[in-house]
Image (tube, rainbow, N blue to C red; front, side, top):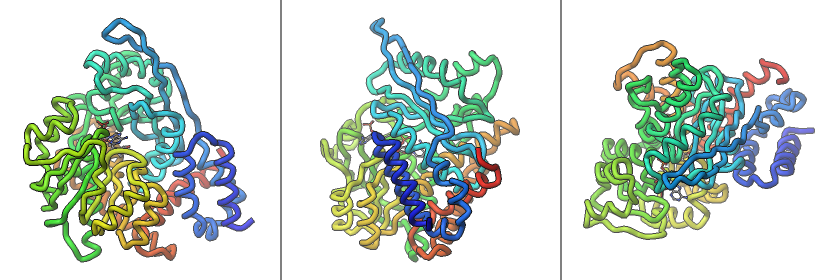
Length: 447
Ligand code: NDP
């Protein structure tokens, strides 16, 4: 069997075995199809069943999460944790609370996370989790009770050297605080390294909240520098208004870019004077309201209900909301609007045909597993600080984050070139991440 036949066989098996998992199948296909030249160089991977093993989670948990609403009613959600690959270190990846969460979503995210974590150069395996719980409209007490119930089961599967969850959509510092609190109560020990994204008063790292968004811009800056340009004065459209979007906007503005949009799942804001980041933080983080409230603070801005930001002409697009938010029609609109760069802040925001179309139309494309690795990198730094029982300063953390992002860019770019695909960062990221995991798996035998 040659490399191409092998990859196609594994892809067919994955599709056959995971029929109801379109997102997972997409993620696997996106990675495996770029690995044919690697398998050609390493035919020993075929006999070792390496790809068959890498697409199968080491283990996965699905559990009941019952909780009591303020109305006295008992509600039941479904909790998940997938431990995808532990070859490089403890499983590491966020928890997502969103009604769309299911095994498919968690597996696709865990698969992506494995290679992303490898790219950071830090010793972290890949995992992911969450629940089909909708935090929107829930009271503070309901959120706390849900987090506590979720952890009364999750605690069995996690630990500082086992599996280290963090935040994701619907899970920020507040939720991590409630989860860590319950974990500590059940275990009766102080194991701060079991979660990352913690508050600063109990083992959190400065800079973790900002890290994914800032990291995106550090990576984007390298892409732009490579083309002999700067961020200064560039028109940037960003989707989302959560953790990732907020700090991507803030850092892009500090580089002199003109960010003109943000959004939530109801619609988007266009502010031609530049998004007022303090207004976004006030509405989304402090008041926890919908983004259309932005108009109350900035009456000259416009709000488009039920629309996506991709219809706005721009130089740079940064999808920072969720998976599948840019389809082929959106990609066409972006290209018509003169887009030059796209860096994926969210996980898998672009469909495969959209990526293909953008790249064929000379858009310099940065894939999520490299672009948004700043969050998990800073989580890795948080784990290190917890193990050492000390805290670095904001400057130290930011300097390390910047170094990691610049290094990821270089590695990804060079790997693409070495494998005959110069300028294709998708191929570069997949191969560079994969090679690290593959080497560790081969060394550790058939497990
Ligand atoms: P948040 O929950 O903080 O924010 C998510 C944002 O996306 C909100 O503005 C939300 O709007 C919007 N959104 C969610 N679903 C949809 C949808 N179906 N259509 C349009 N908008 C939507 O999450 P994060 O900012 O943490 O995460 C955003 C993305 O970045 C995710 O893909 C996540 O996996 C990825 N990521 C996050 C990291 C982190 O450190 N937090 C690290 C690496 C990747 P609404 O309020 O209406 O739901």
